[in-house]
Length: 302
Image (spheres, rainbow, N blue to C red):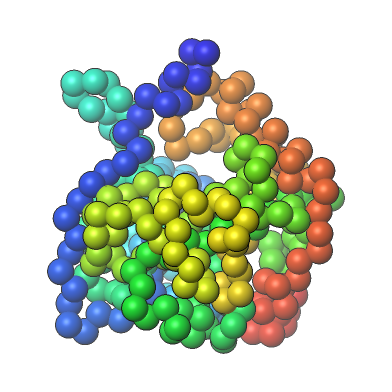
């Protein structure tokens, strides 16, 4: 009970005034908070740069390896902005911890959002896969009038790998849970692509624009934040969000050891992660969408 209370005693929604759009703003930027992802961030960054991402805003949560060197080497120093983000902040009155990832997202919107048409908020184990066009901007073209897009997780497991395989993530991890809208706890969730100049409140998996949490799927169908989890809202016709939740077993264990972005009991964190892993791998289907797209652009990677 105590550990559950600790998890919920946090500030996970941050309201803000949206920035005013610059007249020449354009393109798509990704915002991520990262720690010690040297092994994979280069592949992740190359994938998304090839998919048309204009800029990467990297909030570095205390990396001690070559994470930042690798992303700069992958996409060029001019395309990366690094913000040191090693902190745990609490409300001075209640003592509630302020969710560090949400705080990073709000900071990015307020300080850089005026420069781009779209901002995506994802992690290094999440890949935005173009499906209806060559680039992500092509896949967003039919949603030009929208400001808030929800993309459901497609949850990938260990694919039988004990240790990290040669050839990277996209080429090797091709099996996922069959139902992105699964009712099982923790399996159905979303990440967002939004117009930052309309953002009025941030959470990790839900963003409010113009004072509303209503968003659209990649077809343009609207739903409230809670109604997104209904099966009819599912779509990955244009952009598919792959969440490589585990990678190899060795990497999964290292991820668990690092802990989450929030202060919580280590044993409770282990139980929650492994419960989700078991659910992902209980049944799986082959999904080559990312491998097919990346292989067409980087044949040696696939």
